[in-house]
Image (cartoon, rainbow, N blue to C red; front, side):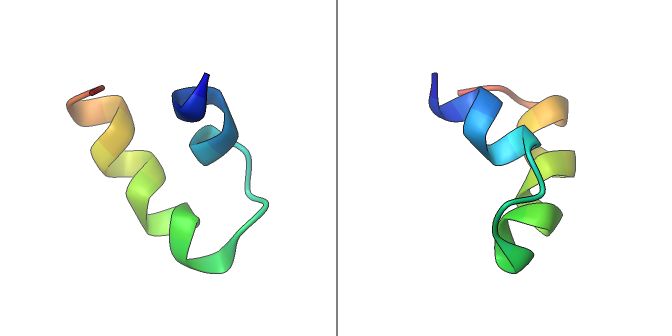
Length: 26
């Protein structure tokens, strides 16, 4: 579930994590 939230550009700092999340999804 958290992965989907990170994918959404809701938080500015999460935007950078999106690439990391897509690269290695926890």
